[in-house]
Image (tube, rainbow, N blue to C red; front, side, top):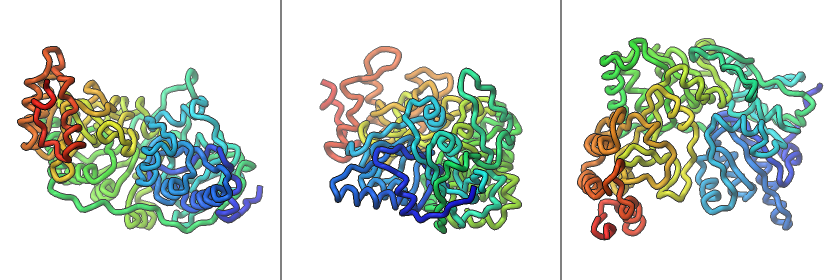
Length: 498
């Protein structure tokens, strides 16, 4: 079949009001960058005529402003799943301008195949190459691309020349059979290849190809500060102590790490600590720090779902493909985040908490229990299945007005049963084998900011007798005080404990 090249505006005409649209990518890496803008413009024009125009969005994870941002500002979204991080999209969802389904990332593709989430009408996919017989080579992120391409009626390709065709070979595309026919996923080390180097589709479904020359929306992380560096050092020192105690194998185990400044600091400190042997990565997002450690032979191999790196680093990778193609694999997220594989490999999972309570429960998603921040992402996929699950967080936020450690989390994403270790800039709380009261004392003593230690110790003393000594009159006093006075340190327990 001859390839048909069209404009972004022509591509947008294949997307109709009330369609469900699947998008390639995972974070801004691999996301389409021009067709979403054309769809947003079409929505604006239809709204001006008094006509409805909104779409459902299935994505791998978050995206960039050229996708989530433009569609949110055009009020062109009827629902969104499974994860987002754009401020305009966040505002739309929190204002109930669109429905939002927060979802474990490893579950999305299977839920789509089972029909739980609705039909996929159109796919918009960024590609480094596409052939006449329907072979699509993804760019720097895979996400749910194999599943949505197979399910969709129509496929639109953004062929982006910023990503060389020679990237082919860096992807490992594999879709498992659905239960009850599924076999084991045969990954026994991060470098195992189990699939194909492209997504294969019926070429008749490709309705058009849009040529683009758009960079990723990959920004550099903020410079590391004393707090993030202290957290990174505490994680590194803790893992060394586990090695020396024989609780980790001497050859180490693969690492999963979340996204952001803290994750980069952790990786950097681990790389510098020669008591930690060179290690493998099995994760969802491969960041700048991983690439730096590869060049220093501190990371041997990285398996992930996306190269969520700065534009400077992606250019470096593409300039040295012969080196990096032997050290990086990009997989669909139901494989990169698969709990079966995580449990088999014995991962160390390191993720970031929005807040934690003194008994070890984690809130990853909601500010003050009501406002969605980003979503649970892949943290749950890894936390429950890891050999060692670690959550990191600075002890405070907003210049100390918010404590990251509270009596009871305002929203629960990861229960105490899945959380093994919590680390802040002040120290390490190893919660393994501890009762609720022991966990609370360990967290308060080792992780809490000095301004909040007396308040949380007082709360623990006020707890109602029982296995977990909560006080339901006071458990959300920190949150109420912040909303009323803007400073959790102003809590007066007598005001609540009546």
